[in-house]
Length: 192
Image (tube, rainbow, N blue to C red; front, side, top):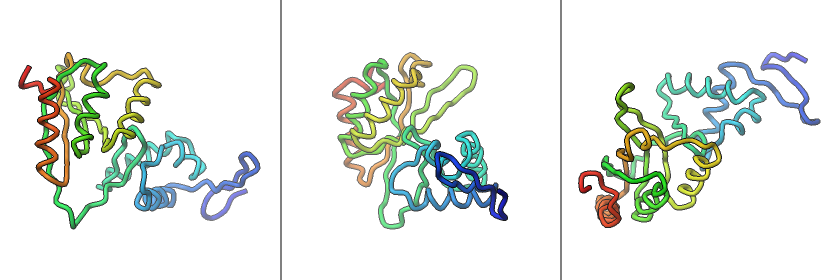
């Protein structure tokens, strides 16, 4: 059955409205803006009655319009600008074996920082950056579980363990505590 807003179809006894183009992107944007947790692409696809690949395309179009959408290992996040909290950030050079990834991330988040991303310098592609967005042990565990269940490699494996992390915090003291913790565990690249 065709409607002016899209297509209606039945899936598992539930009538889903297949949203078309711009209307779907506006609904996705509204869902992300009101979400308190990341939303997986498969969940957005189910809610919109389209495939996950369509959602990936929609997110790319929204990002091209300068919407602050971030794809994380836990799902998509709309980055809300804070007007009340000053955020401090620093990029730190790290090195460790893949088996130490969980311990490294625990060290950082236990200090009160958010690990925003990881960057490596690839000999062919140049700088490669991937979002991590973990702020606590639970998010670290979800990230590590996702790496393990997909069989993916850490970007740092491309560079013999050397990588950068962009970390942020609401206090410069948290960043200094994180760096001190990384130093104690031997995870700082400039000290190895």
